[in-house]
Length: 594
Image (cartoon, rainbow, N blue to C red; front, side, top):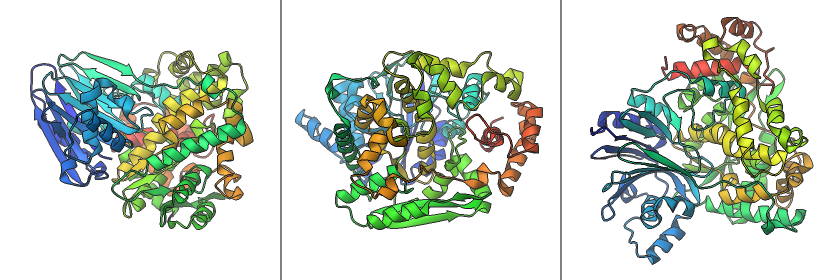
């Protein structure tokens, strides 16, 4: 829920209130229910509100605790806020609202920067100590809620979206060659703290940053599962793991029903979203609102999975909604989806999520979604190949299996001034996998995917596309306690049964076999995958625009070869290479980045 923004000055000046207002207003879609501003001395905060908890004006932000002289803006939801409020009351704190924002403030007052360790939820927080002038920034464990930063001499700005920072003005919008290398290699993933823009960074997940009035700062990473087998799980067999995962998932789904408004489900009909529906039905929910999207077929490829989502909706008697999107609407929908992106995203389902979110937001303002299960429980088809090598060989195998392009291929793709001087993407993978923990090759791959790739691809995608319509998406498979359990689960149980083996065993206790054993699905968008007419026209328009030629990111002969045969050029992972190139350029043009 919501969008936050702000500025702190280190040079003795006052914050640029007009800039903070522009940043705040740029996030109106994230918070259509209210707008607030606060400024004191060198700090200013802005907030856009989506009302989910404490619908009264008492829950408005920025929120100040006058006694403690603390002011806070907050984006997200603390699912255990009621339990924390009771605990804090027992410690002598008094509350004047029923909001989770006030719990965040009181928790900081009680526990200081360790307050985040008490939270179960998704969040980005900016909190000001008025007496000291200190600013505290924090992000949830899995980076579900974003926080972008623009630091220049004498000041720091921050916001929930990158376009909001652009609206503030003065951002260095030159392209970062290291981030560009990651984007082109790693299926558009750019690992924190980088973004493709040199002047914009993002606070890493599970991080608290304390910014002093003089501009000095320090970071504390407060959470990271070890991905090892511990004594706590010694002696557990397959059935024990199934029961443990079921119990943890049941808790995760229940936690995400906390709201003062109804909560629905994005239902693809796959195992993950179907499990959420089944567990909510098990709780006794009736008339649960569920939503599915499908696309017109192209080149013989089907674009919807309604047969599966309909089956689950009938089984659990949900109030089901379908959206079928014709191919000629995909090209027009692209513009809205790209405008909603804080960073360029190449996955086809970004358009699906944006269109589906528009439909859902007309009915409801909070949904649960199945994102994260494939990374957490090893559901993708490439994980067996990653698991079959020795632990020390995993960095090289990961690049072979997962990267879209090698460094040598990038040398033939990018203009020389845009190419990093060595294979920085492989270097990042090696460094991440060298960190202690992660016993096996698969553990190392899952740790990287869960804590880096997942954060800056599917999770970011869901946040951006849903929040652009004022829709809050909650992801129970990224409950941190469930992720900790999955990290300790033996790799062979996750790889079993074609992937997500332990989760499929959970599914067999709750779902029809036809749902559990169906082929793995996704949000297919054939019009993009096969470059259907209107989409190809949009791509040609972007790559032939004067801005593209002036920018000179890609070698022209490479772009010409892609446009000459739009269907033929595929990346190592099978993605359309033309789409990868065109999406970046279209994103830059959409956000007026020169």
